Amino acid sequence: MRVAIPTFKTQSETFDYLRANKKKLIAEKCLKPIKHDSNYGVHKVAVSKSHAQKATAPLPVVEIEDGSIEVSIIGNTYNFCDSQMDVLFAGCATKTIKENGVKGKDLIYHLKDHDTSTDDRIGYLQDIYEKDFALSDLGLNMQGNTTCLVFDSLVKKELSEKLYIQYLDKKVKQHSIGLQYVKLFMCINDPNDAEHFANWNKYFQFVINKEAITSVGYFWAVTEIKLYEVSAVLWGANEITPTLEETEKENEPTEVTQKLEEKKEPIKEVTRSEKVKSFYLSFN
View 1 (cartoon, one colour):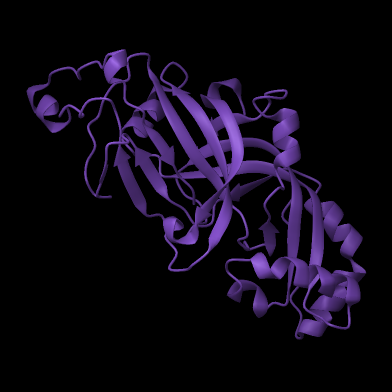
View 2: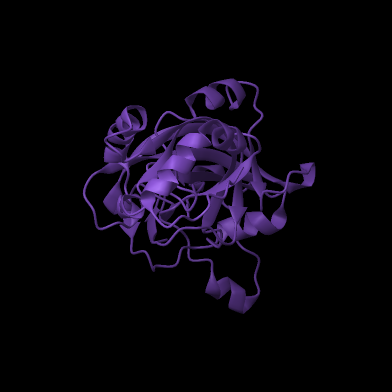
């Protein structure tokens, strides 16, 4: 649940408020599910091991023969402080993935726009995991790595033809996760506050956008979440969304886009031997 913190004239007053209302604030933050967008992202279309194309190069629009597209989604970038001063850290999804993920109760879903009816499902999740990425691969002019929450999904035409076509045409560029906080720690940059200053020293070193925290002097370290879903969305909170593309299949891709469109011929169906593995790594 999103919780508003009053604005005070001094940082000291803010810290006093946080300490006095700590239990209440944590309870409110953990009370209800929220939507959490990736903060920095890459939209990556991979179609082949054989060669990489420039980010601006168009890919052929190919109908997969069974009406399925394999999609890998970066649903969230850890170690990034959001507008609520919340920072998710590596390992926060380990328990929920084990209990409710594909290999558990299978109760985490791939949806559209965070809507939760059975008609809003657009793919079947195949795996959920945390993976490290170089910050430079996320569009940041920085050295080092961070951890991302990745969802492998099988997008099905039979579930949502509109979203299937948008994925196939590389039009789905952003994703967001639905989650609920389970465990978090208050971190305050105050040497006179032993407990919360220790939390600050433990977690602050891993934060990517330190400048967003330094002037405020506090943040919340989220170390455990309950994950409900990942959604395809139009807009998220990210500031950078570069596109990287690679192409992969056993034979070179057939030119099927504009020529077929001009001739109004149907798109050639691909056989299993030529099958394209197409996926998106997309996050806000």
